[in-house]
Length: 569
Image (cartoon, rainbow, N blue to C red):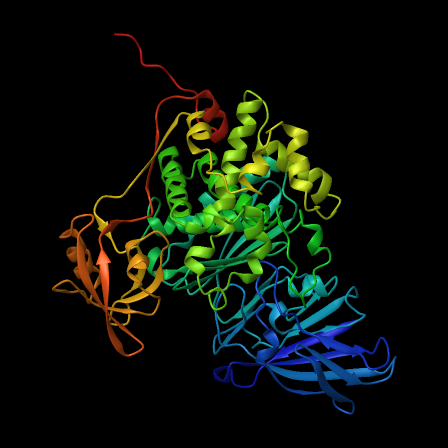
């Protein structure tokens, strides 16, 4: 058995000390640290945060970017020590402070090559009075067991001086809501909505795939979530939660991300692309199924909220409207198929994709909308007798339960077993045809509209947080690109108007007529430039979506109560 000991000397150094003990499986055993983690399809090179490695009486040296070789013979007992910098708190990172140790094993636990499938033990040398929360089975107060390396690094852990925990039971399982930094937050107010989420998702699949599940929450200043086998880790924006309640934007966002991560317990943690079985943590692993893993999950995440009575139909329809408006404002939708956006997810980092705003869109966003339209297309084709729910249940039975990897065409083939959707995949997943909003949404009594925005627009994304108005992206088809604007330009004046803030720019644009020209003054690389600007409308459309009237298909889809006609007078 392998044993990892996690300790630290001074929390303010943000350095974890990791001690790894094992029996060498062969001569010159190799240690490997992942370069990426499941749930974040981007190389992150965690080895950059490793320092001061040693192996006692055995020599140790790096033999690759994220690998080390130990000078030991097969059968010898080996002890490796190293330090890991943990100074970033997000859902997929590791973080050390004077009152908390937060660990994602994919960041800092090295694999002993050849021992991946062996049982692993982890001891956390936290102060005795600290509480420890993780999905790993507990051996004693500070020691935990993982069935193998994959289980170890898929099990985030919070060790902290103070933790707020709410517990409830639903569908024969125990749920723990574990909060860090929740001072001033009414944590109990989340129990019943999350119970409804768990109940609704369990009903879809005929039960839960676990006995115990943990939601690990940190209150911070961003939104971020990562799924795990029997838990998830979520960063929630404190400023949007404090003082809020049901119906508030922050409360709704909290429940949406919670529902999304719970649905992953089926979709991606147990229904897994074949490309990820087993995970290759040391190389990019492209798959065209990311939109299924993430987009379908996003679709069911929010659909769960309306079906469970947590959101009203109007609130859900508004969320769909926002998602559609986001996608229809992305130029890349016109030339990048959804399957390709999934496959190229590894290239999505704006640091490398220099035209990110025009060359990329989120496969979460479009995947959610394609899942919506596919669900409605199945319902129309079968007169409401079948739906995407049936597809998900069949995927669960054929792939999730037996833990069989989902082939690249497995999702499409499973849909075909449920309904004939004609060339839907060729047109909207592997092609770039406009999505059939009118046709599909109209079939469930929703009125869809897409209209140009009023007034002139710069056609760019701006950042005014640093005291000056900077261009962060220039949108294809907009007036800014026609004028020659570049990301990184500082906006100085439009015509005779100083435009140091978004409000001043908006005022200057309101004063212009479509087709009117003016000089746009910018600073680029320290040099003032004069650009010829001609006012144009925003290339991003304005989307409308509303309930148009009663619909039996919509009632079945959203689990609405039956429509009661008004009594005659």
